[in-house]
Image 1 (cartoon, rainbow, N blue to C red):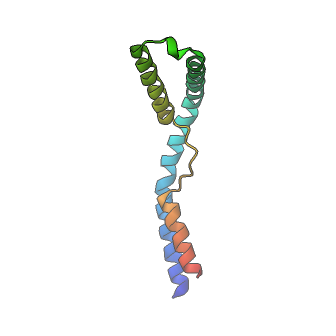
Image 2 (image 1 turned 180 degrees about the vertical axis):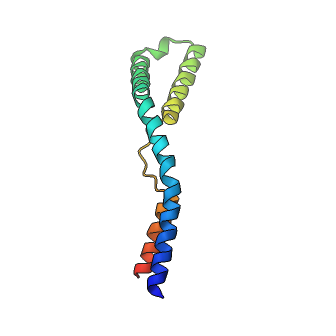
Image 3 (image 1 turned 30 degrees about the horizontal axis):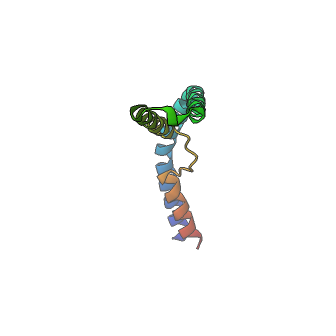
Length: 106
């Protein structure tokens, strides 16, 4: 009975995992294509920020300072959106697989 339960649970886990893998493959391909343009744009943003740091802000008018703040905020937002993602992503199917294996082994 226990052996039958192992076989059924393993089959279900493989079935779930088979649907998840193609989605990750396509996302990685698009990341590779955009990687060069993303790093290039980030370097442009860094150089612009260095220019802003080198400016004498005390000589600027209130409106010019406001425009600089808006520009810096938009650049920060763009960097966050372009994805310097360093997190670890675990597929739901793999997570279920690990849970089932942990339950079956203990």
